[in-house]
Image 1 (cartoon, rainbow, N blue to C red):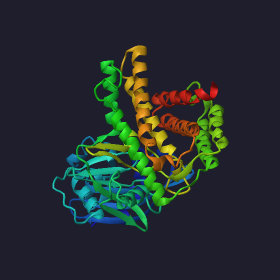
Image 2: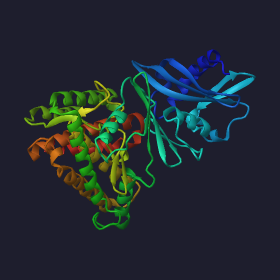
Image 3: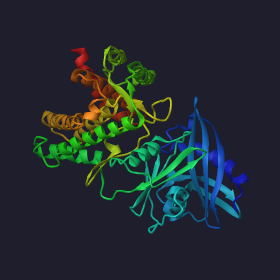
Image 4: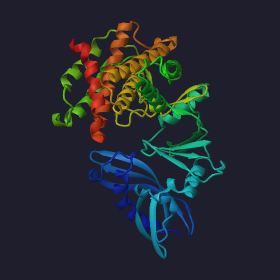
Length: 453
């Protein structure tokens, strides 16, 4: 049996470096001042392998963050083959028994990944012990191409929106989300959810990228090139409209809080401004952006506020044979909220798709040389799919009833939310991918043009 008292202090010492290398953690090692464990649980322990499960509290600057970790321990003298090429998953070496033990993220271990799955659903059978681990803001593991287990890495107390929202939508008969098959909770907090894995599904981002490439390669108008996406985008607009209508029906609506929306936008803008003018792309005028935000206050009819997705983009939707499925209802990870659920104008989700179309077109264009002709084709592709999506969304009467009644007011509110989303993107790119900061900067400049005219 493993000696927890001897092993766990050393694991806590090694975790800051490990967390700093994980995309789902979003922390810098030098900013971590303390790491403590809420609890440790030995899930399994024998002569060959040990699985530890814990919630870890991390003091990171002024924030206190909580992470869920699964740690595997095997003899260090004989490193397992599955760790080859996965050095980022290694936590360190600790003493144990007759020799040293190698500590690592247990999800890359075929045997331990199944042990984690059985914490969520003890009765599920796994035929092929070859998990596919997908790392985003959380960790997902695919088993047998039949089930996908999503483990929440950054944990907050209480229900997780991605579980609570999809559970209720599925219970009400919505076909646009993946219903939970099993869930893992502890002390009232959601820790994991198991869902069906959709074989043959295509991520919206990949589908859109193929469509843009077809246009650029053929140099044909978007409606004439192969892989035209407009029909699918119109259907996605319908799906989002129906989802918003269902969410308003289940959780209710209230008058739009334009002042509250502006305050959230200004907070994000201040964070970008605090990064320093030297780091901002040329042409970014935060005062001009702020003025556009404040224009929301002059809208006599900003529409209604409901519970929304909160972080919708083309990588959060899957195209399947019978339509689309919408994923990941946790909201933007870097946006502060009063609780874990995002409530705002439905147009904030619409704006996420609009910005995502711009991102796809711009990133694909960067791989081609063709001058003004290709720039115009990429812009035409974006416009065509933008109009198709809005046509589908505005065709759902119950969704339109949640929006400003006048089309001009609707366009104005949508434009402000697009601008806010572009500023959020700029903050992310400056922090993690500064070479791509030009994409949201270009979007900001374009969105400000009507105000400057």
